[in-house]
Length: 290
Image (cartoon, rainbow, N blue to C red; front, side, top):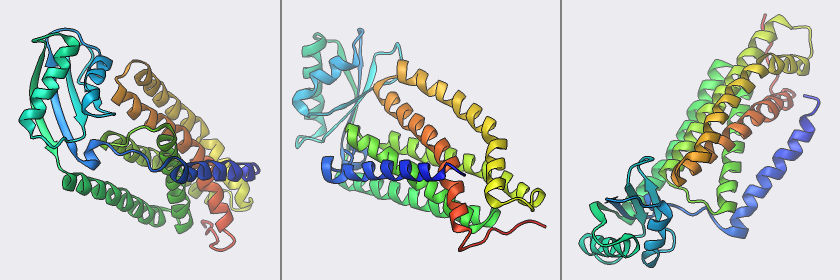
């Protein structure tokens, strides 16, 4: 708790940099899932690199998303902006461009789907509401299970992590799609679990250490749960680093979001959520157990 003012400065700088991305580089680019577009499934009868597919489709759009189904398989999922032509003509165009790059008769179009702008808007709205509802339910749970101020600390902790993740994706120009949304929601669940572990120990120590100051109780509670937090987060990060090294492009973005979320989430559960409860104690005193 004695280092919390340094943490306040670091937190303020990180959030400010994330928010500055909006006027400087604009909003994070949305994927086909949210803007509408075409989804094409294609299979090759020879070894083809993801970059080859991406290069071949450049005439149809600047940033097609190419996802390989699994290592060793030559089947890809392609997402791009929906052209004015229908699905049949798009299928022919994609097949022709791919075979120009990989050889005649090598590509088989296995399916084409169109995601309309209205569907994309509905998905975008649903994503926003899913995040808002999750935060509200978590606040209610934390307030009921622990205290209202701990609930506020946990929610601010989550907003802090999501804001920083948003800033990273905005500054790097990475696409925000349903896969990344799943990563964001996973980060919310992971972070709240870290915060609950600390808050549960605080609640126990408020009974057993009644004569100690609140800052001392918070310090003791964090130290008692620190080894668990570091071990859990550390081993999870090892898996995500492996995905960053050997995963496909889509998996790499997913792993990056989770990795940053866990790192910042561990930091915020110690240096954001708990110190905020300490600051709010002067307005909403933490009740000691008896």
